Length: 360
Image (cartoon, rainbow, N blue to C red; front, side, top):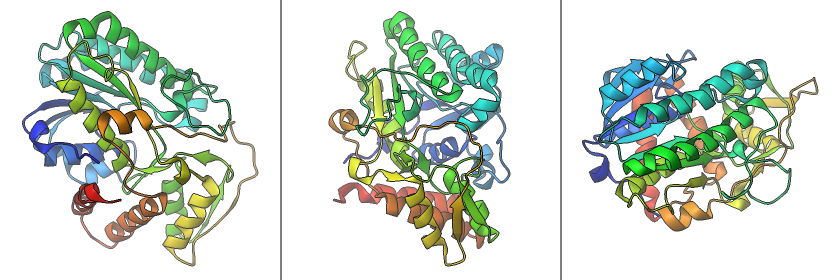
């Protein structure tokens, strides 16, 4: 089991898009702790509260607000950052929202990615790019097997389709332009993440926290749906390890300039109902839930990832069971609600995660 290298990241100029979001804020904290010079480009935080604001990240990195759909703005951000490494997380990331806003979702996730990659063609010091997509980029056949990186891409909802398209766009820019410039480009496909500091709508754990905090029952749409749940630090470790490997790889090393899955062990993939029941148990006896049998948009029922490539080529593997993920998540919300600083709790969980390097 390999940890991201502080020696590698110290002093590196990193352009991180989406740094004001849930995953982006966790990644920003981790990168700044390792001494990276982080240049963040994103929209303002969309929730209140937000992990970005609670941790004071605006004062810890070079923070620029902007939209990846704005060609001039993303070009200016690239010029200002002079990046050596780019981590692209900016996206419209909610499935249900994509049904209501399909064109906005496609514009952000497809053209936003294309705008960034086009701007990166002129980045003289750039050596590595990681574009983050999703486990939902696969053509979902509702089968019990885990998807591998060479399975067909697809999408039956606007969000999934947009991320499949982002994968194709990234591969085209890599093969047509960036690879020839000596830039190694990889994509990262992660499962459903959980962790403290997420307040997005229509995500299971934030919905649990909102309901349980006010003593209400959570209404659950698809309790039988299966998802590759994992703590937010699991895929973030994968993104960092992938970026390191891409940076150090030969430009012709196509083995790493490709797609990587980051997901839980196959025996730790659980249903929505299991996750809600376990979170309610951890929260306390007042927490409860019920089935929402109203009309809801269609969502995949079974989804799992095969992360064998990341294990073999990056030395990455999951460190936390799903039960531990939920314990850490509930703990984060509990102690910050009681007054502990969000930055201190976040940093403590990063340290605790890294200390699991030699765990079984």
